[in-house]
Amino acid sequence: MLDIRFVKENTALVKKALEKRGYAFPLPELIDTYDKRRALLKEAEELRNRRNVVSEDIGILKKQQADATSQLAEMKTVSDRIKSLDEELRLVDDKTKSLLLIMPNVPDDSVPVGEDETENAEIRKWGSPKDFEFQPLNHWDIAEMLDIISFEQGSKIAGARFSLMRGEGAKLERSLMNFMLDQNTAKGYKEVFPPILVNRETMTGTGQLPKFEEELFRIQDPEFYLIPTAEVPVTNIHRNDILKETDLPIYYTSYTPCFRREAGSYGKDTRGLIRQHQFNKVELVKFVAPEDSDDELEKLTNDAEDILQKLGLPYRVVALCTGDLGFAASKTYDLEVWLPGQNRYREISSCSNFTDFQARRAGIRFRREGKKGTEFVHTLNGSSLAIGRTVVAILENYQQKNGSVVIPEVLRPYMGIDKIS
Image (cartoon, rainbow, N blue to C red; front, side):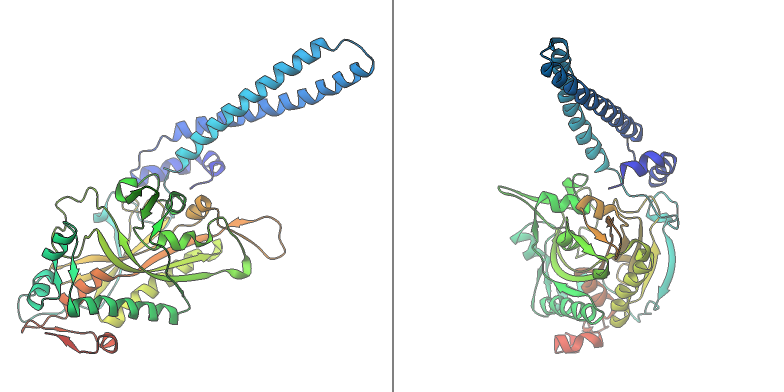
């Protein structure tokens, strides 16, 4: 959430940022609401001052046993008006907050300007796509031949966009989870395993609500939401906390199942593991001082890249353009892994700096050493990695002509085998 004072003082900048995003937002309405609030506050303050003066006058008149009828009448009129103003202020504050909650973050100046993903900027590549001596298969064909994933049984159990991992497929999923967590904890991230059902306040804190309610799975009685990513509960670990400057930076890593309705994705990636309603993911979350968040984003991205490099999976890093940038993000790098079965790069991780956008919504502050007052922290997060998509990448990049799949060397201690056949 943006600071309303920042929006008021930088209206032209905010308007330009919204235009770069291609985001329709009633900015004039928000500014008018803010101006109305200031006018109401001014009137209320003046009336409270007047009430104090009249109250003193009434006290003097009563001591003098003089008539205070007119002053008492004025006091009632003033008090009634203050009560009315307080109610108007409550409504204006509610409206201001509701508007700010659906207003996106301001993109960083370094974010490329563009309308959609076709205008994202490639930053670098790692590894070279393998030249196969045969026509590489899609992962769903490989999985069917090896009997390690059943899309049919997943659909029977739950419905479309669900899968059942079987045998060495299930073990590969678990091995990747453990491998990623071990790599991250070795880099100083603290492992946590949070609830996967969260309340409305938690979803609002990270920006999923109220804007993206249609993307979420919701339980009604009592009301809970299934998390779309571990970013949601892990960021909210420190909701409404005031941290010490010496606490920062704080690094967390977490494995969780994730749940997304995939609203609006009808007809997209209907086969395979790319777009599922339920999937597993390992996440990285950071809480840092504002002056460090740019560097911390680069480090976070490098930590996610390191997993892909150790797995020997070719990938590229792209900077998302303004039109493809997530609602809460100020800047995002996507890691896109090469999938030979699809002959294209596909997203496997997003690494984002949210500046103080989430912290302001969730009330996450810190106090600097020897200074009064508090500041909002900056939050960051990144996938390390989406496990299902990593399974896809391994099956497609390590497939062999005889139908087997070689296990990346770093995973062999976890799998206990060097290939699936």
